[in-house]
Length: 161
Figure 1: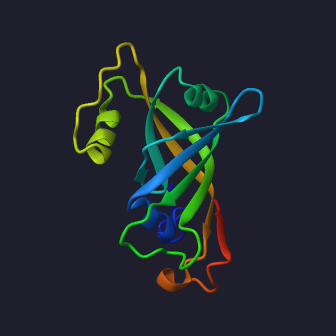
Figure 2: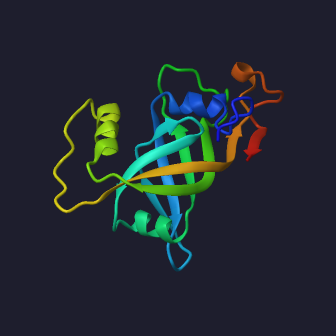
Figure 3: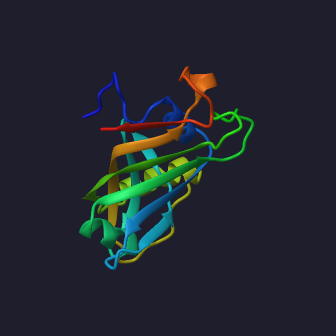
């Protein structure tokens, strides 16, 4: 449950998610090697959602080991860089919950959000899954100027649930 007084996805993370950004999901292969995927995400309170298909490497990995890491990086735009001269990113570690999405409704919602409402390409036999990342730990650089956090861009802010 989200604690509205102390959200794990703080204002800095929400700011990055609210603008153009790149997301990279890391899962763990059975032999312990990292596996990464570029994905589209949607914030849902203090959780992050994305869509995938059963049988994909990331889905198999998450079914076996629900621990994941998500790197979000703000892309250059006319928005100010929240970390001043430092990086504009956040790393989110957490666990996932997988829910079947047999009609692909959430997948279409993601297409509406990221692809201007285009119809997703046909996926014969695909079994869609909605994945909820429940953050346990969030790392972001200090965003002193905008969010009133003491310190400079070379410091870090880390929050755990």
